[in-house]
Image 1 (cartoon, each protein chain N blue to C red):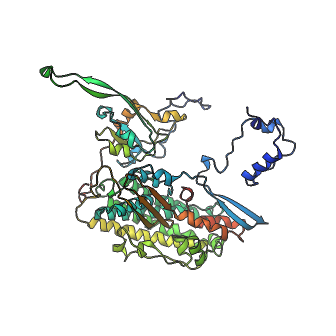
Image 2: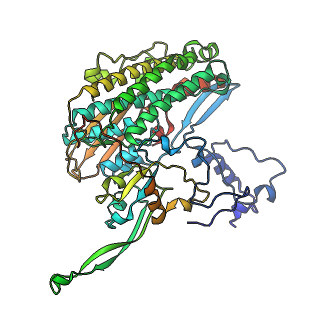
Image 3: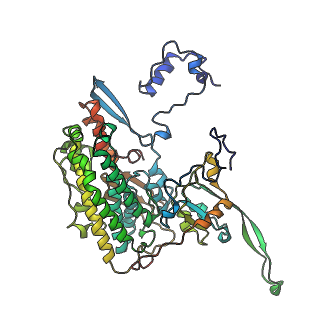
Length: 410
Length: 156
């Protein structure tokens, strides 16, 4: 066995310092009197934040004065897979398989962004039926993502009367939408249903009606789901006035989505630069904004947006049912090559702005495909809003920023 | 298939037959026909053309084959060159790598690959997740018929 693993040799002060630097000085001090062979014997396996079993967890480095945070640094990148580099050696269908993984709560939106970028650069016209189906699926996916953030509460809240019911209602509601998504796409999380030029397969008979029924069922659960945010005294007390983000910080950090709108930033691409069928849904779409920018405002914004998405999904299903006969995808060559050029496409994802900068040199793989994800930008503001907060405020602040760690690290 | 891992509790079924009992939570009968649970291989249709293995984004399909001469027709004796066709030696999918994207099913030009809804094939040993052709053939029995299509849709 290698010397440093067996513990036979006392580590030099330099090595000890280096180990401290690697762990950021967080390594537990060696218990006195146990520095002998028994303590150090065998191979040390570190189940730290870099271990695959800890996927989806965020590491924060905090400096404290008593329980007051004086310095905060999110340590990110443990789930970095180099997705953008992997895109460069995959054709556009294979990219959709990868692109729908980094934000596992908003898989359909991520598929959509890649397809819209490629279609815009290649000048592909997507059949109207696919446009409406995509709009409906995007809103159903948004509902799923919002419900996920409205269904998990910390233990001291989760046990309170009404909260358990709310979380259970949100889970039941998610299940009904997931059933609709699985029926059309075959997947519950990674739908793999978008194709360049449209959608993968025809719509099953009667599916739009069943999707509408699922939306109605979620709507019936809304009062229960909203109880926590609207009524629960402890939840409201712990989230109001804490973790406030100013409109200035929103533009400084590039915060988007419900986290930005809660600070009064009235911006939503579905209205301000409409894509898919959103121009036709302008009468249904309302942009929900807040003003205080605190944790509670963000949760209220998310809840309001959930209602809007239910209306949009309902309207999109109605619109889809009214369309004349037609295909669900454009006819394209078997080997799709995107002509030389570059394009930037941005869309309104469940967590905020998703940007896709696509550079093609005429090949069947992109020369470069840069992702701009909402989670990455939204998370950065932690360095400012955590300073001055108490440790007990960490949970509401982290829970109300609405990010997915895979979407940060990708 | 790897050697079974010793099980302290004993009484586990043999690898490859669903170590965990999922029946209490869900049954495949409730799942829609498009549900992407497991990939079935109808090997009679497979020509070992390798399209699926090449298109697979993470290369988890293993195929090997050899050429076999096709018996020539007696009437055409002496005419034409001898024909050969591919005969499959191995077809395996490693479900520990599979990303369940379905590109292989989509690209197969000979209708040899299908999705089946079964998802309860967890294993104690990761090697057991590589399903060889016999096991992939067994899944064919569980492939549901495709759903009826919305009359408004006019194909691709």
